[in-house]
Amino acid sequence: MGLRFGLLGTGYWAKETQAAALAEHPEAVLAGVWGRDPAKAAALADRYGTRAHDDVDALLADVDAVAIALPPHIQGNLALRAARAGKHLLLDKPVSLSTAVADDLVRETDARGLASVVFFTNRFSDGIDAFVRGAAAEGGWHGARATLFGSIFQPGNPFGASPWRKEKGGLWDVGPHLLSVVVPVLGEVEEVTAVQGPRDTVHALTRHRGGAVGSLAMTLDAPDDAQTFEVVLHGERGWRSLPDGDRTPVEAFGAAVDRLLDQVAHGPGDPCDVRFGRDVVAVLEAAERSVRTGRAVRVARTGPAA
Image 1: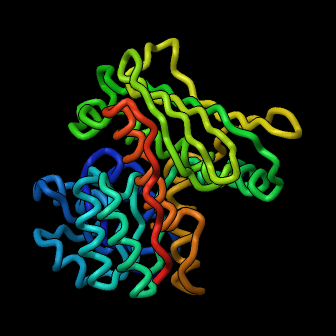
Image 2: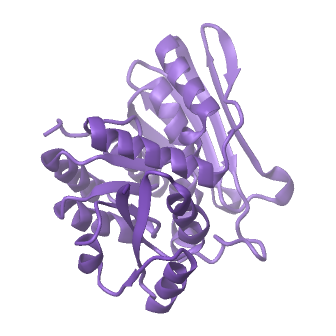
């Protein structure tokens, strides 16, 4: 029998990506589902031949790990609850809307020796992950230009009715995708300056340790013809573009399960663990504060490992 996963969440991403990947993974068992709407939890459990739980703690008692597909302000506290129960964590991005909650997650997983992975979708495509690792090892980069313009507020889009996305916008929803490929190459972000433009676009300059500068732009409300995803590095060897992804979301989530299982077998530590997820939250929080205050904002430093 494989590692027993409990799935927290019943929305589109939970149903079509996480549950699908867990159900077909040869070394994982989708052992139960919990959701804020018991009827939706029951329907999802029935679809994948597993059990719905009305109580989170009952689900936690029955599994080894949790996969969470919930809004970040809900995910953070439930992930803490799972970690304190000794469960390994496979989280969505961003891990929370607060650096304080993310810091607690790091402390709890460190103290208990728990495996953790944060699902930044593109980092689980082989070509993109190899590009990021290679560029980071190569060094010599002066900066990056990164743009992710999505358009989710169209009829039929499964994410367009999400209240947290409407409130927090592209900075918090797609900003993590940009940071997940820029930060490992340019290094830790020390300061952010950000402004808001038309259609809820956020433009952020990130100053990294060592002097590199990132220029990031993101929105969930781009005109149809303006949708794009592009990351370009520049430095001593000129310009280099991030390749396209080579996995579907279900395949990528399966790769995230593989990386969690590897930690369970060999010990915690992954480039996309909760410590990295925490650092992404700290950058987003600083960018949001910069938009609000009109000033450059220092990024809250991560604490030492426990």
